[in-house]
Length: 513
Image 1 (spheres, rainbow, N blue to C red):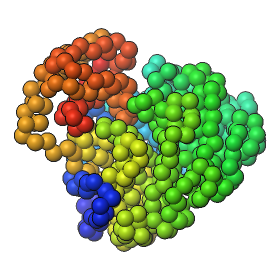
Image 2: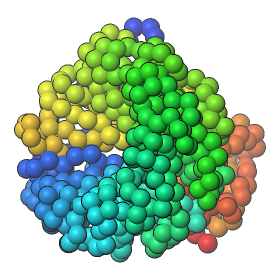
Image 3: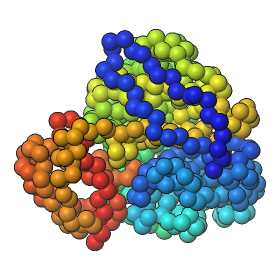
């Protein structure tokens, strides 16, 4: 890892009386890369307490080895303090861009993106850009790879492991041959269901006659999937478009049947980049909006972060805009343990809400809200050049890991590095620490049942998977409870105990059957 001087990158924000708390302190930060650009990393938590990142790199020096030519998938595994454990360059002599990474139930990793290569690690290209899926073992060794596509261009934007051990992939396609059987015109949402070894089980396209691009997919508690992206179409699968591009949220069944779809936005450009199921069974969608009409209210000028809460059937419950007078473009949102939301993206932070300004040109902008979207705190991170936030996750200690890329830290306008920032977690009182230390969870590893003992009165116990998706949450008044885990597949989860809306325990739970 390169050690470079980092500007004092943090602008502590004063919000007068409209915000209830200050941003968490920075615990540590790290940058990774070589002398050429490393950009667009995704990040996920790993079962050993560390992190996995995947994006793309053109370098073959510094932290980067093994580049095959042009851009490669670049996968970096770190420990809990951000030190590199291993890194892998994957690809061929063409352009290879990774967009999504997650740890798998066997301890390895699944990476998705797109490739133009026909050599090196890439086999089976169908022409143009293909979806490229790569499975790595726990040490980063290539186990298998698959290309999917047609004679035109395709890209994968999001991949998740499914409860049956396979994978669901969302992106887009311009083709109507090869692996693609239907195209509605121009670019369509494209969803692929793979088995555990990457074989195609089914694929579906969704869209209309214009430009439709899927950016995010998650499996839902009913076994189906929620998809988020944007659409400029007015026909076929798409109804209700407000003009230009809208958020287009699509709910499908476990076999890909379209259950419902919603177009959300105004007369200008509105694009969703992240969608998640929420603990109440509804959905949260996030991205950017230029609109000042239709579903969008409260615009601050130019592009804004736009957060939209939907019911379980896709009805709009509330929406909020965040940002300043120039542009703020959202990329990722997650629900937090307190029921609120954490989001990131990029901001040209002049005159942010609350009268705040940032440091440089483009900064990471992190916004934390309550369950109804009211801002609790916000913070910009960056230097005097460009910093682009791409992903944010809450960590088991109640803190946050922020991910993106920056050329402020390299001091070279043409050279971006991956840049991650760890924010501190909950600071428990002496009493809360005592309560935490008394709680016991057993057996762990577990099979069909776990017991949580020595609970301090009324608590909420939740189980999340390693992507942050909440699988289970329930209130208990007992000091000792037994919970059925038979529905959970083998793998690592996070079990969390909340007391009076504060997380007092967050630990790994291993399911092994």
